[in-house]
Image (tube, rainbow, N blue to C red; front, side, top):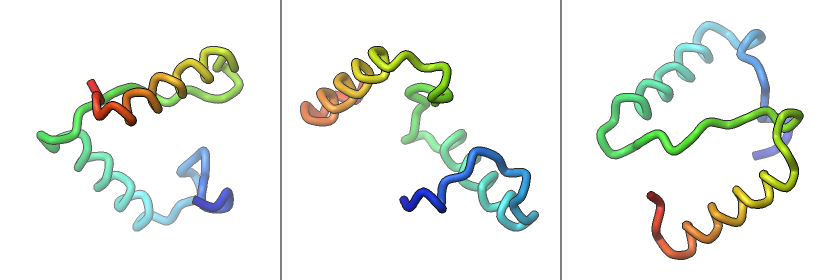
Length: 68
């Protein structure tokens, strides 16, 4: 995604955009094939070394096909 597509708040979205976002949230929340694997943290709060380790584990899991 282009940086201009990424936002940190829904405050300036139209009502239609908020409804669409909520529709996607509900899809992933209630769909039986999608499970929660974690939560995003703000970059300010994340330790760079911890971020690097998390990225390493994510790439390792992706490469092995082991997502659990």
